[in-house]
Length: 117
Image (cartoon, rainbow, N blue to C red; front, side, top):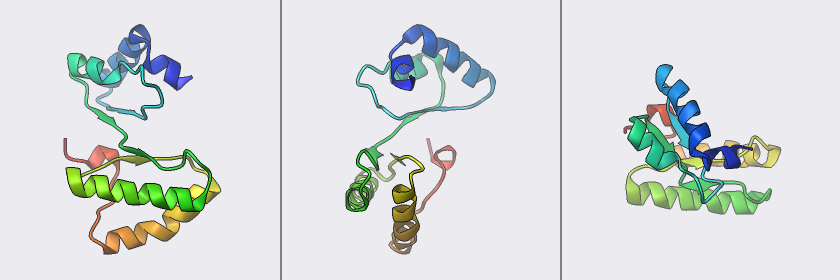
């Protein structure tokens, strides 16, 4: 389980060592409150990001739309925000409908790897 791994410093040192060798970064989904990733990434000088909003804890279109509104608010406040979710049909349907609206409002949708550090 990923949540178990992100709480284990020994495991994450191995993972981060490989990521660093390959010039990759780590995105922590923060599914566990015991994640050691942020501090360890800092110690190992590994590019690191964490999610701001989990879009689909509930498999419900209205819930996901509300989460997107929270993501929008966070982006407006912080200048950027990271939302993550699953590739579930309902999540994809909401994103297909809502992302063009967000872009029309001036929000730029990018890959995490394209975000300014």
